Amino acid sequence: MGSLFTSLNGEPKDDGAKFTDHAGCIEACKDKYIVDGEKQKGLGACKGNCWVDTSVKVIVAIAQGLKK
Image (spheres, one colour):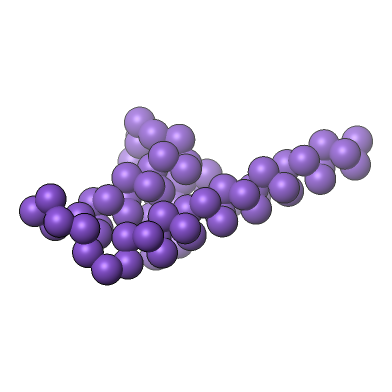
């Protein structure tokens, strides 16, 4: 598995982030899609992608645990 922290464009991020991978993803979505307190189009899709990514990681971890 690659880096747990990724930016919105999928590049590894090693900035000493204070958030978990999922929380960091959600915060990155907020930073990108909330401008002057107004939600912009794409915020929901961005957060949805965070949930999909987290879900895949959980499923992979469970599958690896069941192999042992």
